[in-house]
Length: 107
Length: 128
Image 1 (cartoon, rainbow over the protein chains, first blue to last red):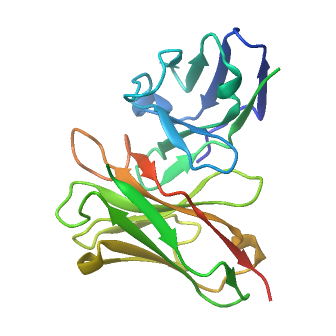
Image 2 (image 1 turned 60 degrees about the vertical axis):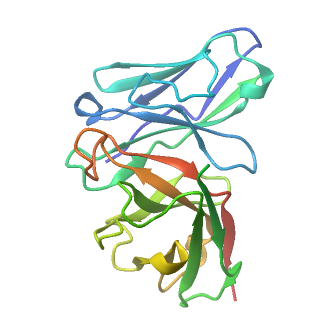
């Protein structure tokens, strides 16, 4: 089972960045999004498709439609430059899967 | 605040067993509703879940690594460990431990699970 993400997304500061994640099992379960900055461990920025943990800025949001989930960052800041990973399980719930990751570049 | 810290050798020889320990502070592994897991990241690449453990002894492993991975718990020291056997250069990676949060409605491993928080990670290089 695979989760497919674009390898890279580029935006200018203040614009909106959208990162997609596709997987056949996503209609039946929630997806989760992690931000990873260089040399650091991943941090959850969105859980259950569209919920934001405490401490995560309001410019981070998530949505789901069919087999695709989307992480949206509105009014991107240079500090948002990082790798972003989606995560869910396979359709039978046997194992946990991460997407390949998307490098967000803020030009 | 829950914190996790990985420890172990940074260099392992090919064909040997990689052994790492995760020390949990700010919370107890025992009698918690959480699983405890290991995830790795080869240099410059993405994340791969290795396996997760519940304090009662229930374990779940990545099918692609199942024959080589063992996760165990040391409740007296509030630690859990990873052993990966017969390593090759392809096992060179940063290894993270993390609290594995199960489905909030069922408490079950599987769908609607995620990892939070994570340890800082430790680089393990497989080389002779």
